[in-house]
Length: 394
Image (cartoon, rainbow, N blue to C red; front, side):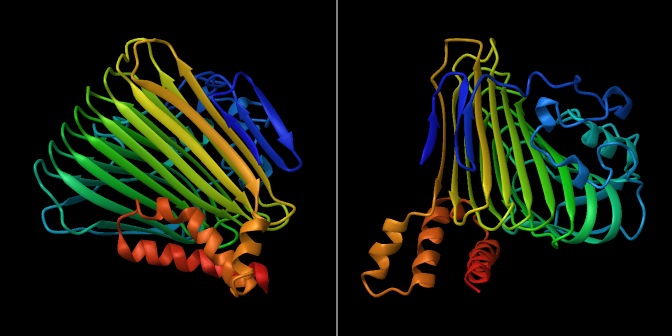
């Protein structure tokens, strides 16, 4: 087991497992945030924010050669009564409120989309059923922009489900009014050849609560960049993630929690399992506590379970603190191979090997699965895990 917990600058490597802890690198991007793609140089893979990403597999999203075309994606929204669903033009004042693109692909997506989807929950509205957004790839290249906004003291659960085959770059914005509570479950269950690159920006209002659950299974390359900032004191953010990286897949999750406001909280917990030759998972967890953010309470954690030889994990927790007046701050990262002792313990009690492996992996993910809070998504996730494990046995 290779671990890094509250470590100084540096990294350790054990076989195909890399773990590092260092000062926050997301604040030292190759270009400042901008809505204009021309402000970002074409990445070459040597930049800090691109060094783990297989640029040659992005199908031109990073260099401007991916032109929107083909059938793209079909987006459908199922919303309870009282929710406002709109398609707006590029001149809508709500665009960009939650954050600005921080890399060339996000800026390309912002520059290229034709209409943005906006889902609004009026103030003090408490939904008892989830809002469901289906994003189904039908081939070709697509650029998109989606806004989810909650008025003051509104409460909602949103499920964004990605399926099918496409090359997609998108920005997603979550804007929470004061006292609002939003849970978002983003499922990446793409077909094998899909490419999905997206920046998720959340702006958390005063005393508001934001919970993000990212579930990633499918796709050839999936690169997601969740980012959180606060618009008022007392805001709380919980970011959970589950990913199962199979042979040949590249799944990358790059997070930034910017504590730019006093007396706010954040908790980050991502877990992944990997199997198969050239399975590659990347997790970058950046937390920045600005000088003005006194009273911050934050923690981030990443755990990875390597099920077979040939898989690689890069796990980099980063924490930068500019004020000593905080409640608490910490981070941890651990990556290890499948525990043969656990397997032997179960098999010694008469449990067949394939069933024992299933129980170990389900136990590894169990705590995070409970945070999803949507029964059909939880059941689908567990079924998908078992499907992946069956494939490894076959």
